[in-house]
Length: 173
Image (cartoon, rainbow, N blue to C red; front, side, top):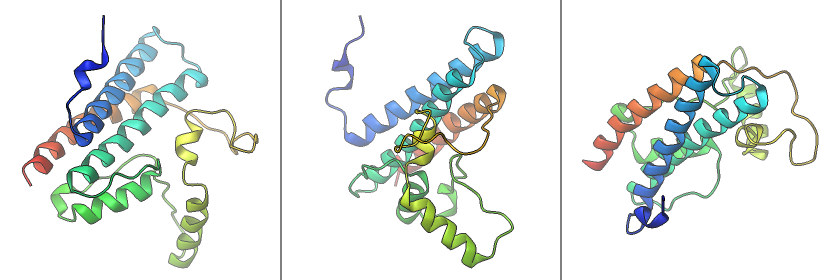
């Protein structure tokens, strides 16, 4: 039997980190299973893996922000969380390149700022796209979306390793 008492007595930051690792390890396991045929290779199943990786990234950022002494944000917006993380840990050794942050290539700086402001109106879109078939208004997500389990497996493995390294650096600050 697995019981929740294993999580009792830990700091908020440590709980965020433990759940971060659990989400990424879950994504890692399911990606491997999808590759070898033990987990259905359908987009509905892929969204479970996408959601686990997104949540793992979110929880790592919340762990780090909490460890810095700042109040832990309650939103799921990766770009916003990364901005808070970078403010708390500006040194280059803490730098992160994360998934789930839209890159706007080929636009002017003015247009990029406009697109980011538009994105901030619907901050949780990347989180919601991994969990629901439509937006909060019942409209299907725009565009065609694809998933490659090998990429998400490599990403989960990289993030587990990178976050462990960063955790040791953050804990020593």
